[in-house]
Image (cartoon, rainbow, N blue to C red; front, side, top):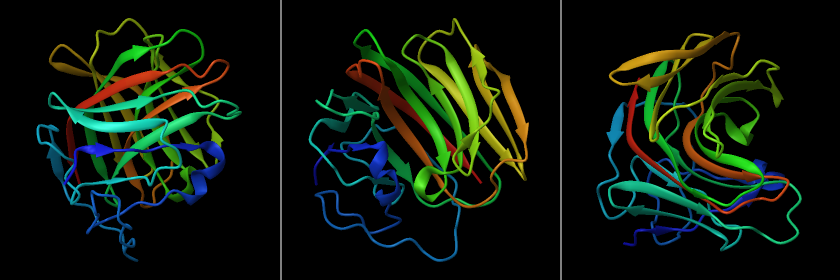
Length: 231
C-alpha cells in the first residue's frame, strides 16, 4: 500500500475520467467497472489512516505528475502545481462510489496555501458522468464560499455566495427529489446558503475537488476532512 495518489487532468479530458467502485489498486492498477444499477451506502471518513479506503473512494488515473493527493495529519490534502501552456484549468479529485437517490453530504473545506492571481479552490461536488450535471459548493481562494448547479453543462445564472467565513468551512449538500439545498456551518448551526429546484436527479459521485483557474493558474494546496454521507 501507499498513501500517495497522483491525480491531474485538464478540462478537455474530463469526459475520459474513470472512477472505481470496488477493487481499486492503491498502487495504480486498473480500476474496476461501474455497476449498471446505481447504489448508495452511507459512510463517514475522517481521513485518519495512512491511505485512502478504496471501498469508499476512488482516484482519477494521473494525466501528469503536476498534482497530488495525500493523507496527512488526519486530512485529505490536494496540491495543484502550474502546468506550462495549459489553456483551460488544472483540477484533481478524489471521488466516492456511485450514489443514487436522495442524499446528504457534509465535509470540511480549507485553502491551506494559494499563490496570488487566478481563482479556484477546494470544492465538494456531486457530479454525473462526464461532469455535465453538477451540484457544486466551492471555497474560493479569496475566501468566498459559493454554490451553484449545472444541467447538461449549462450553469445557472444565479450563484449563491457567502463571504467572511472562518476556515475550515463545514459545508453540506442535501438533495431531496429534484431540489438541492446548500448549507455552511456557523458555530454549531447549519445556515442555508441557497436552494434550487429542477436539478439533476440521476446517479453520480461526490468529489473532494481542487481546481486552479485563469488568468495565472496559481499553485493551490487545499485540505478536506470530516466527511459524512447519509443516503
